Amino acid sequence: MRKNLLLALAALLALTAFLPRPAPTPTLFIIGDSTVRNTGPGQQGWGTALPRYFDTTRLHIVNNAMAGRSTRTFISEGRWAKTIAAIRPGDFLIMQFGHNEGSVPDTTKAGRRGVLRGTGLETKPLVWPDGHPETVNTYGWYLRKFIQEAKAKGATPIVCSMIPRNEWKDGKVIRADQDFGKWAAEVARQEGVAFINLNELTARKYDQLGPEATKKFFPGDHTHTNPAGAQVNAESVVEGIRADKKLALNKYLRPAVK
Image (cartoon, rainbow, N blue to C red):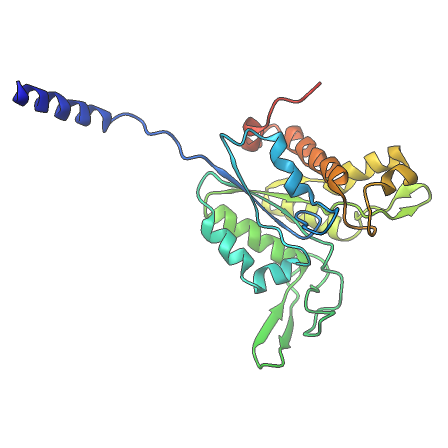
């Protein structure tokens, strides 16, 4: 009897060895600046509001964005190294930078976040006061690094243009379509990855609301949103995902509320 039981267990174990194993739960990694993740009083980034739109029993979401960072400092501080080390095949990566890149790049406090403008291969060599060298690249170069290294790990990169600031001209929100938004779209197209024109999607909503209603989303300045503003931007991200039917991230979204 005991022998038969052991044989049956062995046969069962042998059978289960050939059964397909459930696929690991993928992770959506988010990287960016304070407009994506913000712990300031009364403020919130859209990356914090995003999980409500996904089935988080089937998709993990890790928001690695950090306030005050540019593409350059996200790398130089080792934040990208930690993110890419955690990425696995089948994961997703959403990136949104541009708010902190604008200063002239140097080793001063004002210039440590700055990058070279555009998407080319231009570089600027620097030497920090402690003697260590740094090569500063263009905004596009840094985005390509994120994209290419995520692809190499088997992940799906998604590029977002930066959310619009609460700045107006001639009755419309000022777009970023002549600089960082334009360059983000250009790199995404060149690398063959998904692009969400977050800047334009949200700017259209602000245009419809008007300056007074939009101002309610910005309690402290013209850049950082409150939770309500974060939700507006998160909804724009979701709109961009839904618009790209080829994007596998779609299958993890909760059904749209009508």
